[in-house]
Amino acid sequence: MPVLSAKRRVPWLLAVFVALGVVGVAWVIMVLSGRGSEGFAIGESFTVQPMDLDITITKDGELQAVKNVEIVSPVEGQNVILDIAPEGTFVHKGDIVVKLDSSEIERKIETAQLDLQKAESDLTAAREGKEIQDSTNAANLEAANVELILARLDLQQYVEGTYPSDRQNAKTNVEMAKISVKDKEDNLAQTRSLFSKGFVTSVDVKKAELELLTAQNDLDKKATDLAVLEKYTHEKEVTDRRNKVAQAEKKLVRVQRENASNLAQKMADLGAKEQTLTLRKEQYQKMQDQLAACTIKAPGDGMVVYSSSSGGGWGRRETPIQPGATVRQQEMLIRLPDTSAMKAVARISEAQVSRLRVDPNDPIRATVRIVGHPNPIGASLTNISIMADSSSRWFSPDTKEYPVDITLDSTPAGLKPGLSVETKLFIDRLRQVLAVPLGAVYAAGPDSYVFIREGGEAKPLKVVMGQVNETHAQVISGLSRGQQVLILQAGQGRELLEKAGIKVAPPTSTTQPFDEKALVRPPQLAGPNGAGPGNGNGNGGGSSTVGATSGGGRSSGAGGPGSGGGEGRPPGERRGGRSRGGQGGPGGERGPGSGNSSSGGSSGSATTAPSAS
Image (cartoon, rainbow, N blue to C red; front, side, top):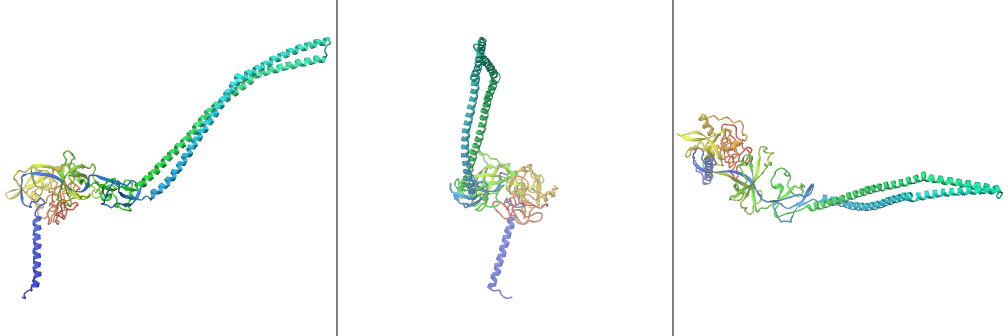
């Protein structure tokens, strides 16, 4: 066989070293995959001892300012953004941050100005008309009053003056006529005496007779005139003058009413014109204010954050805030956060939020880990939202989460709103209680079991579980101090129960309905549907769907290389725990998450196959 040259030996040596390196890495992965997320090796035993157990809720969230100044669009209707301050820039009070299109408002101002001028002209005409009506009313009223006075005086004059005088004259005329008749009778008698004596002729007698007849006729006429005056003329004149007085009185009332009616019309017209002018002035001023509002200035100092970049929810925009975007009245455009005091906002499921409280005197403490900052920051729970957040209702309609505010004790410089954070709320601390790792507990229906070593075999022991954190579960009863429990492999719990003659009902669904009673049970415990702490080679599991506390439970229904698994979460909660979900093996699917991150595995609802794993 020919001897290999040095040049040909070098590639072979490199290939050998590479192969050895691959084998070494594979061996390390296998070793690591044999340990649970709690740091306990699968298949080992755990000695039960009293321990302090911190009950926590760990959730991801985002950083927000405690105080924000929100800038909304004050312009009516819809307007287009012409210019806006760049997002992330720091502005001072009085700086122009937004300019809206004002062309339509300027056209409205021109129309409003014409309407205002017309309203002012109409008001001037209405005032002149009212003054003219006042003058006309005064003249008409005065004329009516004079006419009534004259009518009354005329009646009084006739009744008290004219009629008595005429009646007296008529009576005097009658008396004078009677005297004249008497005189003519005496004259006729004397004439006739003289005629008989021959002193006068018959002509004189005829003349005396004619004068007597004339005097008698005149007496009859005077008597008739007196009778007509007393009986007819007097009644006629009195009635006529009384009628004139009555008509004058009615005319005065009519004039007064007409004056009031005409004046009321003029006053109403004047009032309408004044209101119209006031309305036109208000409209004109409103348009001027709207024009001024198209230039929006910062009400305070702060960093510009667009509303389209600050979270979702009902009413969120489909398009970003930018020049050319259309905005409606009262729509938030910019938020100016005060970054001197910050808070973390996390969303807690409805099953867990009932365990929280807001007490300024004794607040729930928390720690907040901010992306890019190595050390956690102390914080306190300061607010729990009354209403559930509905931003994800279209993607997960059964999920109900309540935003909570966790205010930082101190705010490092340079923080910006929107940074991702991991919050840990410390609900309670159980002092010196018996607890076991999550991987040692198997849930079969409403019962929970651990497996203790007796004579080289694993014997199932029914226990009553209490509260749970990310790594351990409290044991209320069923275990004693010093007993050793087995850290289970994937599927081992079911096998050991069946071997002991305990039947496990097959699963009917991959999810379970939420029950308040489940709050007393650890949500991470393994069950027939694979939602719980699975152990052994390949135990990356789906997140548990029963319970109210977060934790680091693993599904016993998932397999494949890799350890860890989704946190135990309430119904509808998707975020995984610290996970290196491995490849799905028999009886299960791949666990949620494919990386080891401080904030948990990748978000998503892990499913487990309905198998006996």
